[in-house]
Structures are given as structure tokens and as C-alpha cells.
Length: 358
Image 1: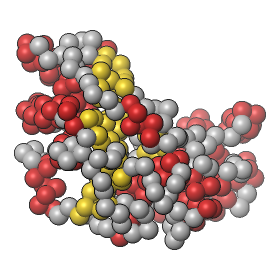
Image 2: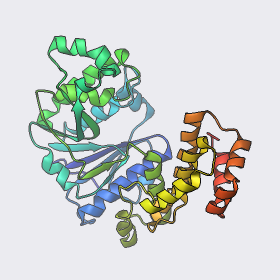
Image 3: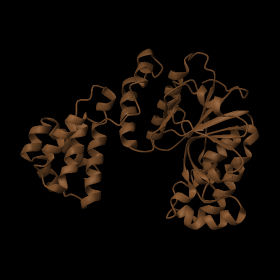
Image 4: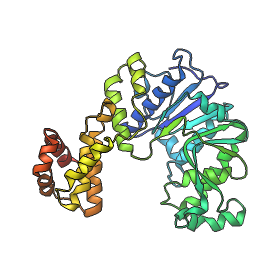
């Protein structure tokens, strides 16, 4: 593990809990290094704040072990775990002139140095700049907080929202995090079920104080269709986990792309025609199963098959209620589907019948 040099740009990860988050973080770090170039003398420091060092043992990062008491304190007073992101970045910026905190469910399209070129005095770097606060007036954050924010002159309907999968700041602008933390503490009781409270408070804290810059061209943040991208990453780790910085591993990083694997249009039309031979409630389900069975040329796209099958059953149960195991068997053994799935039918049946949502 390397020691960080506070004068250098700091790329920071916060990763704890289930193994999935550590797998995400490891791949995100390797993707940064793959695009950065010189692995022996990288131009940035990578710091990982975590509850376990073992997943990062083969990576050139500085690991900071966090005990449960520290994590609890960072999430206080309401146990809001996203609060810890702002607390951590505020702490890093006490010692470093420039830092970027990045969520684990990310990977790089280009060099991370491009992020730091956008972290300038007077600017907040975020993953993406979204729509305006007033566009969704049914949102809990709008209904419960607009009056308070408007009365204090903190926000209005024109305030741009942000995605905080990336947060980058210069030390001289770190006070924006003090403001966002204070707002999370105050507003959490008023918007307890609002999943995006953390990034909303960041947007309010930055409004009229800092310019906003996005980086979706540099980073892919797979907050949507997470299961498919996790499947790609886990396949990469199974193949390269013992040598994550080897030549073959770095070459394969580029194959873990940001595209959701879908069959070509002509094949999707064929799947649609086939599905018409089944009861109407099962047609979308069958098409999604077949998406997972398509022989994609990219091995990491092929690894998404179980994620497609899980999502197909989840969507079916959401639309029509829980399908009983015997109904599922009958559907999968329909003559047309048996012919189309071939040997994969047995794999799908075994997988879905042991899945929690089956």
C-alpha cells in the first residue's frame, strides 16, 4: 500500500458492508488505473476508507480502516448513512488542496485526471447536473421543504439538482460540506424516506455559491440496472481477481462497457413473435429471459444472463403478483419456449426456482 502525498490530487472511496460494494470499489479503482497509465508512479493518490483491508491488498491504494463507532458517529444524529460521504470528504480536504469522492458503483471511461481538471476554486464537481427543483412538485423534497428553503432564501424552483455519485472540491470551498451536513441533520426528520436527501442538500448548499460541473463523459455511474453491471464486474473479478493489474486484466477493463447488453433489433423482433404464442401476462417475461440467453460476443455481456433472468421474474411478479413455482415451471416448459431456450431452459428453471423472488 502506498502513502498519500497531500499535495497531490486525492481520489477517495468509502466502501463498507457486503462484499458487493468492495467488488464494485475494486473494479472502479482498477478502471481508474487502467486509464491513468503509469501504474508504478500514478499521478494521483487513491484512498479507501473501509471496514476491511483484504479486498484492496493487490491494489496501489492507501487503506484507512473504519471501526463501527466511527461510522456510527459519521451517520449521527439520525443514522443516515449517506451523511458519511460529506463528513469523510470534509475530513480529507482539511489536509489536501483537492479531492474527489466517488461512489463504488462507478467505473472510468477516461483518465481520472480529467476529473481533477474540473475541480477548480468556486466549482462543485458532481457526477451529473440534473433537472430543476420545481419540475417534480409531487416529490417529498419539494412538498416538505420548498417553503422552508424559500423563506430562508436558500433555494427556489429553478435550483439545479445534482447526482452525487462524484463529489469534487477544492479545500477552499469545503464549507459547502458543512452546510450540506447541517441541512441533512435538520431536514432528515421532514424527509426521512427521501432516498436522494444527501445529494439534494448538496445542491442546496452549493446553490448561488458554486458553479456546477458534471463528469458523465469520464465516469459511468450505474445506479440504474445495477444487477447487470454488477454481473459484468463479478465476471471480471472471477477472471482477474488474483492479478487485477496484469496486462490481460487491464485489457479486459475496456470490455466491461457501459452498454446494457441487448440482442440486435432483428433478434428482438423474433423474440417478440415467439412471445405471442404464450399467454399475454408472460410475454414480456419471456422476452427478457431470452435477452439473457442471447450469445453476446462480449464475454462480460454474456455474464449478465442470470441478472436478466432475475429481473424478468421480478418484473413479472411486480406486474401480475407473485408467480407460484408450479406456474413458473409450466411457463418455462411451454413447447415454443422449450425449443427456443434449448439446454438453457434447465439452467433458467434451476436459477429462478431457487431465487428469493421465485
